[in-house]
Length: 423
Image (cartoon, rainbow, N blue to C red; front, side, top):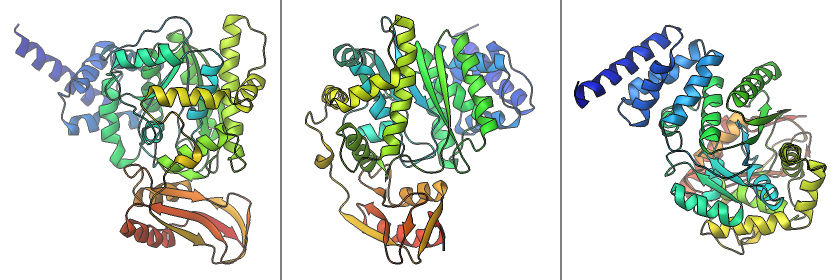
């Protein structure tokens, strides 16, 4: 059999496997590998890839299929190899303006543990961690460049783009992005494949749930948590999961630069820092440190140590080291960030109390403003849940580098309000 016949055979096997999955049948590892291999080498059309993505919504995957899909996604891409303990944290996301990763990474690195963070760009929100980091530093590196950065400063916050880690996943994300959806099983595979390929040994997973989050119910979060832990065990990764209800952003900024400013406010211990973002970052840092300490037989309280590292300025120092290693401004600070040239304060039309924040509408309006492509665009929330508002009191500020987008966002807000105010 020549190479062409072999390639044609693989493609037919992948197509038949997608047909089989659409009918709700279980796939073998050979079939799963064929799909991942064809997608990672961009040999399947967008339509066939879309059918594959849609197939996971019908029945989902069995535990063995989850393992096989993750393994195949890893095997069809590059792998990173680091010596010793490799820490990581991941959030399934869905709630904009909750940029804990960029606070956690420098805390863990300052504590003396390696944390090579490979992040994704936005899928359902106006900014992913990679979009926020890219607004202040370079995020695209080769595997060799990334290893040098981690060896030098103990951490990185990079995008998967040029690393070739789980390449099929990035192609699938491009298919999902216009529809702004992901299935739970697909999220699990996507996250775990990148962790396995990056050599992660200790992992904390943030699973927020809420009526406008990716995961809407506590019971679903529990099911996803169990699948994550089972899969982590199969790959010999020590994992802990934090299931938490989220009804609003933990920070105040929505959009790359605004979220970066929130991160710096926390690291600088600025008086205007978002305390809920700080609290969540400390809790997750504490959980990850506990996992690492346990392995090293160190008897310390994780969250207490995380707080000390943050309050002493060690985390800010480490963050600046990471930014410098990634070709950013070595003296970066919250006041050095430039916001979009056009802005508008949006006032309340009534007196009352904020009873609800619609995160879907928040995402939509931020995207109308130009986020994440326009990294200076976005929304800054002056008010949050349970805050009282007076008539004509500013509730939020919208930013855009395009005055027409700013105007369009104002109109959109009238039809898709972010706040529900109880009079």
